[in-house]
Length: 239
Ligand SMILES: [Zn+2]
Image (cartoon, rainbow, N blue to C red; front, side, top):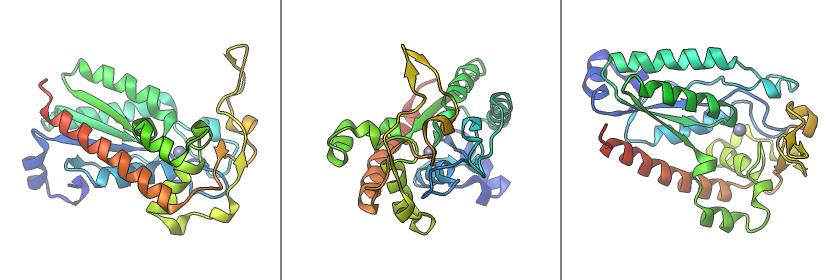
């Protein structure tokens, strides 16, 4: 149920007593092979499969750390938070008490948690779902039996595979790279690098060359299954 396609009278019917999904993501570099819209495109595709009211996707997030790659856009933590808080309050005004962020971008996570806590004071439940955290370990082991962390990184195999499965026309797989690096490298237990460009030249963090539509299908279906269970759980939840 897409809010953007409804009339206000239809919206009035479905908004009360329903879970409202807010897809969030980013517009940021995703290596030489993936589109800038990767994070919000994936969040949107997952959301559209749900039995819930889905509002228009929020396509720009907290991505300043990718700024040395062309096309990356970002808003500040404060802007992102206040914009989404306003949307949550508008939903509350229409009687909504259960909101779920389907988030495609790790840089947004801390802010979404902050919003979820603040909305508790408004008697509105806010949940957060992120596909890469939801994947059951047996699914991960099946596709990446060894060193899975290297395949689940930014613009690496898992994310690239989702893109090839969901919108193959947007992926230049021949440009994919394997980069043996980690996110925000540490020294003596402390983080010492914050800009993505400092630990990856091409923007990929991990191995992306083995991405395939078959892997993307498995990942999409497994994470959607978890997401659907979460939506049902939230529907049943007593506030
Ligand atoms: Zn991403």
